[in-house]
Image (tube, rainbow, N blue to C red; front, side):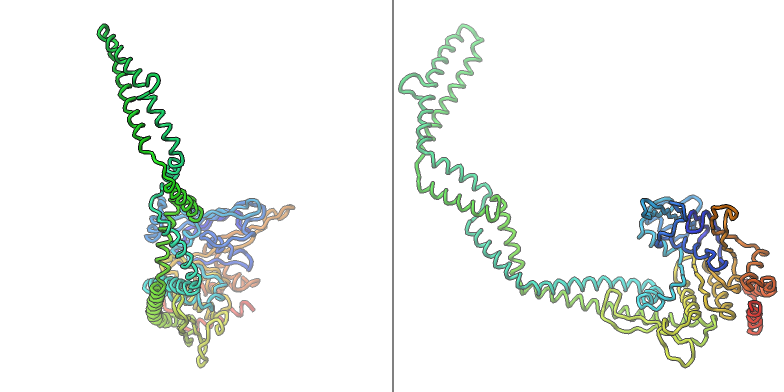
Length: 590
C-alpha cells in the first residue's frame, strides 16, 4: 500500500507531501488543476518516462519519493535484490532527476540503494497498477489483450508461454542452421576442395617434429664444412695430446705434475696444487681423445648434404604457406584435418540438421496446442467473470467473448486473441475498440481491472478519470465498484464525478495557487489539501453545481448519506431513489 508521496520541483509542484490511507482515495479539482501531475509523479518514481518539461521552471533538480508498506512479497524482492530492509517496515522508492548540460539524467533508488531500470520494472509489478485514460486506446490491441488473458490464466499459462517462447527460439535456430547449410552448400564444397589440397600438401611434407628445421640447419652447416672441421680437429688434437715438434699441452702438464710431486715430499701445502694439475691433465687427455675420435668420424657426404638442403627448401615453403613457424604448420595440419572431417560428412550433417528442425517444429507445435487449450479455458472463465463485473455497472445486457483464432506459431503461441463486445441486445459481437463508446470503454476497463485484482498481488490500484464520459446511474455504479475494490486494495482515483468522490474514504482537493500575485515575479504552484467533513461537503457542492455551489448542498448531503449507507453495508437504494438523485444532479447543474 502507498503510504506517502513526497515531491520537490516537479512540473508545477515546488514542494508537496501527501499521506494516503487504505480504501478509496480520490483527488478532485478543476480541469487543469494538476491532479494528473500527482499520478505522473507516482508513475515516474516507478520507472516511467521523463520529458524535458518535468523539472519545475528555474530548477535543475527534482526529487520524487514514495513510501510503501512492506509486505511478504516485497520482503522477498528485497532479499533477491540484496537490499536491506528499513527498521520501520517501510519500502522507499525514490527517483532523482537533474538537468546536466542540457540533458536530463535520473537515478532510481530503493531504500537508498541505486537500482537499474529492469529491477524497478520488476518491483513495480508488486506495487502499483496504473489505469490511465490512454489505456482505452491500448485496449483494442491484440498483443495487449493476449497479455491480459495470459496473466488472468495464471502461473500455468505464463509458464507454458515461456516454454513456447523457448521452443520457438530453438525452432528458429534449427531453421536458420538448416537454411544456412543449404545456402552455403556450394561454398562448403569449395572449402572442402581447398582443405583437401592443403591436407595433401602437408601430408606429403610428413611433418613430425617442430624442431626438425633447426636440426637440419645444424646438420647442413656441419656437412658443408666437414673438411675444415677435420683439419681443425687434428690441430686441436696435436695441441692437446701429441705434437710432432715441441711439447703438447699434456706433455707440459705431465712435467708440471712430476715437479709438484717432488715438491710435495718437502711441503704438504703443495698437495692441493698438485691435485688441480692432475685433474687438468686428465681433462686435457680426455679432450684430446674425444677430438681425435670426432675428426675420425667426420665424413664428406655430398649426397646427404643435398638431401638436407632439399628438405630445408621444402620446409621453408611449408612455413610460408601455413606458418610462419613449423609448429604453426603442424597445428594447421591438425586443425584442417578435423575441419575436413566435419565438412566432409555432408550427408550426415544435413540429415542431422533436418532431424533437429523436424523435432523442434514438433515440440513447438505441441507446446502451442497445450497453450491454446489453457487459453481457451481461461478465456471462458474471464468472459464469465467479466460479465458478472459489468452487470452492476449498468451493463447487464452486454455480450462479451474472448475469441481465439489460429495463427502461425510464434514466441507467444499460435493464437490471435480478440476481445469481442456487444453492448446492445441483438447486435453482433464486434472488436471492443470498434464497438464500445467512451463511457462503455471506461466501465469495461474498470471491470477488467476488477477481474485482475482478484488474482494479482499488487496492493495499490490507480485510476485516472476512469469515470470519464458517464453520469447518473452509471457514475453511481462506477463509484460502487471503486469502493468495492477499495475493500481489498488501496485505490487512488482522479475524478470529476461528485458521486464517485462522495464514496471516498479519503478526499484530496487539488488546486493551483499563484504566489506573490501582487509582485512582478508571480509563480504558479499546485497545492493539495486533505479534506475533512465540512470542507469536503463544500468541495462536492462545487463539483456538482459549479457556480451554484450553495444550491447543490442538499444534493451533496444526499450523496454523502448514500455513500455512508453503502460503506456501512446497508441495502442499496432502489432505482427510484437513484433516479431522483440523478435528476436532482441534472437540475442543479442546469
